[in-house]
Length: 99
Image (cartoon, rainbow, N blue to C red; front, top):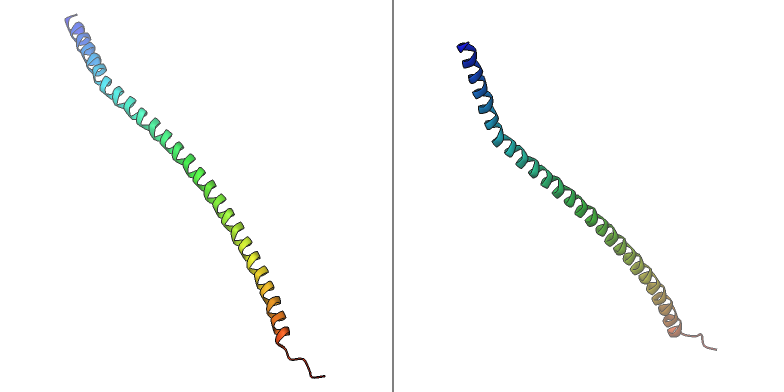
């Protein structure tokens, strides 16, 4: 019986020694889980920021395109007006045939 009790004590010591070794591992696992959670939150925030930046860029590009089209329209209108004015000036300086 002495052998069985010694084996039981050794087994109990081995189990308790193993349990105490798990505490630091559990703490490290909890720390790692906390880091993963923080990184997931950071990734989500970065993703939202990127989406907002893309939306702002698209709006800015649309505004720039609209402004460019408006400028082109004004330039074409001005060109037509200048051509008409030049035609009138040319007509004014043409010599009229002698009567």
